[in-house]
Image (cartoon, rainbow, N blue to C red; front, side, top):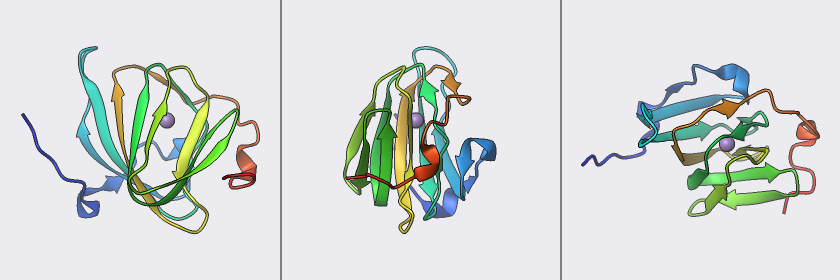
Length: 132
Ligand code: MN
C-alpha cells in the first residue's frame, strides 16, 4: 500500500512542455510499467495553461483538486472546479487545463497505454469560447 498527498511544493516542470500551452508542473506518483498498473500524476496548470488536444488509448480519470478549469471534447466544453471528477473514455479527442483566469490542479489516473499527442488542433485556439 502507498498513501500520498498532492503537494505543489513537490511538483516539477513537465519534461514534455511541447504537449502544453502555458506553464505546467507535475507531481508524479506512479508510472505504469506494465498493463496491470495505472499511471497517477497531479498536474498543476497556471492560469491560461492547458494541454494540447490529444487521445489516450485508455480511460482517463481526472479529479480536480483545486481551482477552476476546462475540459473539452469534440462535442462540448465544460467548466470544472475542485471536487469534480471527469471520465474521458479511451479513444476520445480532448484537452484539459486551467481557465484563462484561474489556476487549476487535477489528479490524473490512467491505465497503462500510449497517448496520441499529434491529434488535430481543431478549434483549440478559441479556448474558453462556448464553455459552460
Ligand atoms: Mn487527457
